[in-house]
Length: 404
Image (cartoon, rainbow, N blue to C red):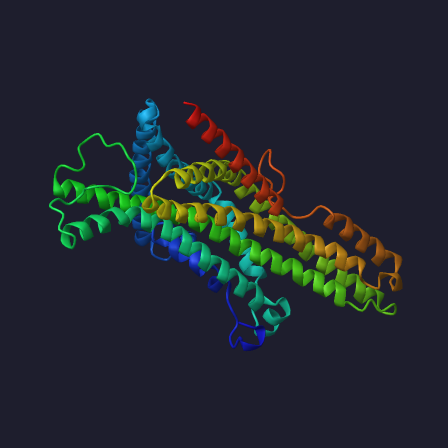
């Protein structure tokens, strides 16, 4: 959608619609502090906590299954198969815990971005909001489809396969299998009603994990899109300023306003970094292991398993690329401010103006970024590092497996 076709202004709520709606399906209400219905907020919170208790019990079952399988070389393939799901679950847990621990920071960040959001159609055209939103929606749609396709495929495939075999292919028994390898303290497949209760319990846990994993990244995409839009606007205003030598007071007021605006954007970037840095560190480490284990499954399994795990592999690689792409975009957008300031006709202005501009340029030399501990700033270089780590783990796993 081009800016010329936009007929009504887009609100910040429009930009936030996807993560907010998906979060609510698992009981997480980002704007609970604004709710006028305390009972509804309480019920959502109970639903969220109950869901995560159930989900973490299932994760414990996966860990027990992994431990039991890794004890014997004959079953180590099963341990390798369940390892990517454990990694995915732990990252989903970490992302949700991060959102809970930094709830006040998140509220402040979103409130400030909403306040800074251009309200009128004219302002939104100046900010090129339609272009940023168009790119953001495409990215969100692709990643949402892949993430939900992964959880849906793993969850529903066993039941669909068993139904087709039993009802249409003449098989005498209905195979009571689950999409995930989980140890249960009871026999979950002997009785039909126990199997189906357990099956839909696992399905809810898988959806909750997928949504928690997905929405944290969708939230990051929306926030960084907004920040890049603001940095781009600052750069455009700087480049377009005429710097008339006879209007020194006006020039100084203009630059002082943009310096405050720029400082506000950098402060918000620091909030994003504080929220996401540790969870993204775990995300990248786990992603390296996930890609390694999934690639091993793809090279050592049947066509049926390969197709399922290929969706998982694609989701993991796209997720890491998505985060790195937006980290790179944030760095590039913040650096552009310094370039735009230098490209002005600043030599026509007063010494006071030039000193202020120099300070702005110096500040912009340290780009806005998200930097996980021990990792370089998140960018496309980070993506290459994660893929490289994955290949090294994969080569080590293949060598170790066949040596035994």
